[in-house]
Image 1 (cartoon, helix red, strand yellow):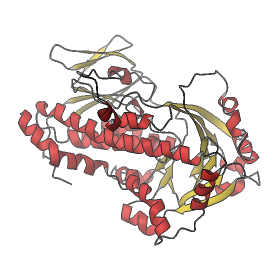
Image 2 (image 1 turned 60 degrees about the horizontal axis):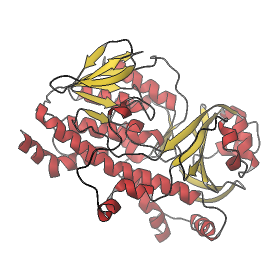
Image 3 (image 1 turned 135 degrees about the vertical axis):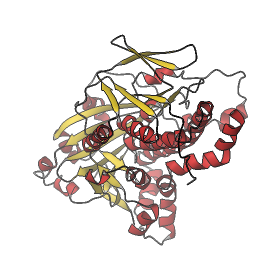
Image 4 (image 1 turned 180 degrees about the vertical axis):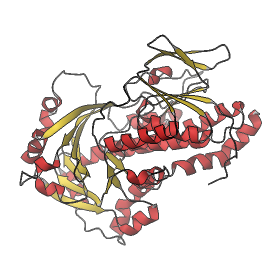
Length: 451
């Protein structure tokens, strides 16, 4: 990592949304020397839906940089257990070998959504961060000199130097950046083929539809078919035609999470049905124990995620930046689910820790756009490919897949190396190194030219 400057030119950062990523980026920006205000339309003590947090090694490394993080209870995942959805039979296992995890610098953890939010709220209160709940942002404007101004439902306004949108998929901050930037010319076919968004569209997925179910472990223990699911530390991947399921404990006494999703090749139209009824064609394919598990759910949430219309996460004036689901889809069924947003928060804060003159802000935000575009496409492509692979219908391709997953993997074998290859690329990514490498290769020279 490169050396950071001793001081920064402080700017006023307005964070829209006291979400995971909103609180983390707010804390990091304030620690870097900037003035930070967090605006959230909800209350400070609102309940958080328990969807579970999956933290692969690179996310766990970032999380470990925060103070007092040991207070957050987490469960160490031992690997991925692949299960045939129709029979509930274990097809194969990819173990998180100890020496590989040590090389990656951390284990794979499963944590509680509510515990992590409680920790982050407490962390921000300890540093006396300016958090304003029940402050709903309704629109955006600019001052004569180009500073962004947020307009609140109350009629009040607040001016800053940078707006960071962290209010999720359906939040207002996404509307602050047009879905398609204007082009001066029409791209030719070769250029279109290189466009990462075009490549994603070729996968054939338009929407992922599904649900997250939260179940009390003590209720599962009463069912002899479900109780064994609680005995292993592995993350269970349920494979069935055109769908994928994923389940695990998030912490021993707390909750068991089951997520299920299917891919749609067309735009989703809301039916108004209960999500279990809407997914009936999928759920009926699974072993009856899945239905029994869902019957025990004390809460659930419908999940609708559309393929992004744009990769743009910074506005053309370089006054707005988006992170988390405001910026890009992070599949809820995926290895990272909500935690991919941690990367964006650390990357943005790392870049802005190099702000020594206001003229450098546009350059640093261009770097953020470039860094996160590559990573967002990389992870989304991996997650979409996974749901297509795990959701293969009965036939030769599924047989080949199951035979490969059934191979007895050992940490020194060729097959193991092949299976681990793509996973390690994802787990080894470092959000801070990405920011530093961009700075050394491009950023510092571009800043010198702009000042």
